[in-house]
Image (cartoon, rainbow, N blue to C red; front, side, top):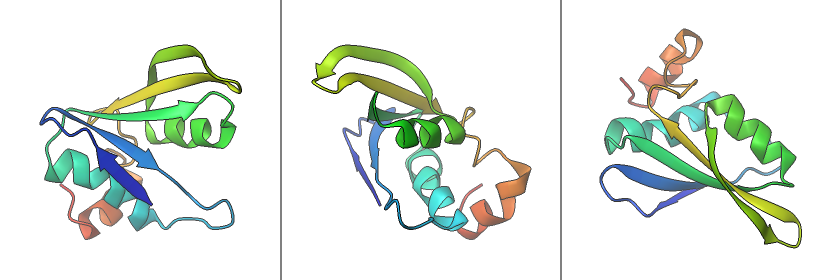
Length: 108
């Protein structure tokens, strides 16, 4: 699932969670990115990931997020990484391979 917060017109924070036992559909990926960029028109999507959460880091970078900041020694387990993504950086919404799925969920 995904929960959005801190919407201010230009950006929004996304808290993305996936069950390790399940693989989300392509429509799920497209929908969670379609909403902030195409429906709300935000310029930047923001996410926070613990530096020891390797699977979340892989997912975020695969989707197009880039590390923008890091809070050192955020917890006993390590740093907090602040990832951001613009519409132009979004690999899913901008990929020809995803275009049919994006159209199905109401994208561009």
